[in-house]
Length: 207
Image (cartoon, rainbow, N blue to C red; front, side, top):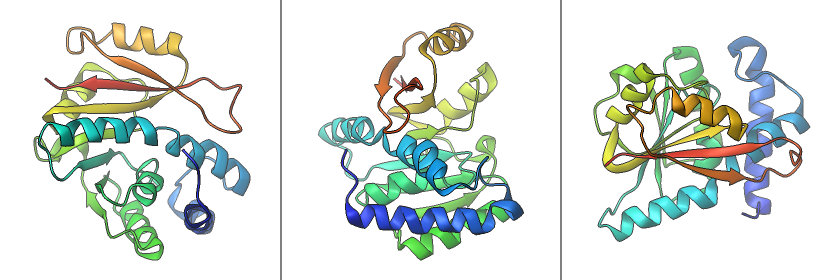
């Protein structure tokens, strides 16, 4: 995807908010602007084309409103960059820490993201079948308990979309939960500035 000047401006504002509140809220592991842009914004946006493809398939199947959950949103990654890029989809940022939720609500307001709702909750307490797509960068690795939780909050016909790194590690991780997830797809992601770092999106469909 191409980052438009408007999206770039919004993400620069978002990065400035992260830098401003990072020490108090422990949002990300860096407060360096360029590193935040590459490792967090560009990385989050690298899955846009894949998520749009999944959403369009759901629409073709009769869904009219696509609901996307960012589970364990933390500082809003990948949810806020995705929501800024995809205004036609509704996003819920699920975060258990109330102070981070306050940051997320503030960031969404400053960026004018009317398609974003913040839910102060643990993943286990999210109502069943809330989302067509549940995405996340925070859970590493996926275990049986968390996988069951994530699949429960995903609608039948929807999917999980997990940002992951090395394919070798993905194979090991998914082998451990193959009783729950016998089939999955790995989509290679290309992150500008991180050409030497392997990035993938793991898609698990809920049938």
